[in-house]
Image 1 (cartoon, rainbow, N blue to C red):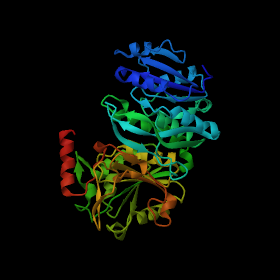
Image 2: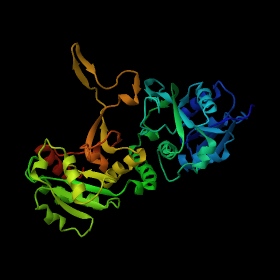
Image 3: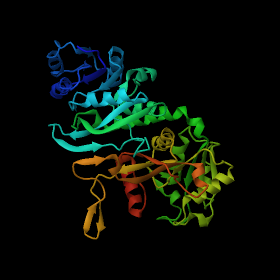
Image 4: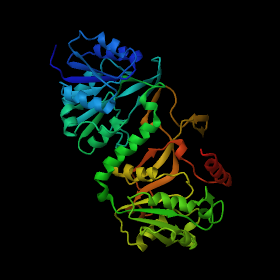
Length: 453
């Protein structure tokens, strides 16, 4: 056996029906300088029987644990690894035979690269290819590092992983994003535009457990953002509202579940410790009656001019007036919280802030991914706007703004821009997105609350 250069580790918790395909794909690699660590994490299916088939192979070591989870196993793999590079292969995924050759060659030739990841084929539970997922080349065609590498099938230098303290064991998902958030500001990364593994989508895999993913994603951003929080401060929340030009006069005073829309927005902002000030901006001083109910010194009122509230006037003009009135200066951040989003959460507001900080962006806002085919008219009929067929790039994804919250730098406002030139986003689940645009929307919001949806 040649000297181990690459440690591959695979963990299975009741993924026995896919495990053999994963293991065999390692055995088929076109280089020999690898080892494979197999972890049976408390499985009750045939996982152990599959692993036992490979006990005689000196390149493979088998470990047993009792349902300790992926992050803790990742740190065990790091501890027991002999290679200078390390990579995770999920038990339900499959390597291309050249993945270790290509990825290790990248790290061998580029000593300044900390990690490298490839494109991949998305497959169904039967192994049929659904689509080829392509990532644009970072630092070349992609200069915004807001889309992390996969946790699986990303090759990283062991010494760097050790310098970072390994994996965070308090996360139930998104270990790849956690690693990415700690690497990108210290080291260079790379990606290979060749599909070198098969990423399986099925009902039981962790990728589809959306609430775990959402919670982990927000915690990772919070952990990464908190480190640089002072650098981006002060942080002020603004709740814009107006007397006219909405579906009802003084829409802010309409109630959902016994609370005015303004009360809902104020209470969400007050529940966060990130904000130095929470400023309600309105051209109707009657909102002061609501503000006076709260005894938090951060809560303030700003009287907007009626001219600044017309539909065609950007809210950036109001924000400029607020910055000047309260002497906020051109440093720091502003967070817009909309009264028309009654199901907003403090987690959404804070994710907008942390997403901006993590990516050193000029602004950040919530979006929904459009998963329906979109078309535009051309001289020869309709043509697709968003990607379709068997090849999809991260640049092909179409988003629509969710209008729940927007974080922006104060300095953007000075030349009249609301977002600046480096805009990043975060995807929010559909059950967190609701924006009142019509009277029907308002009635639906009231019904949703009554039904407990």
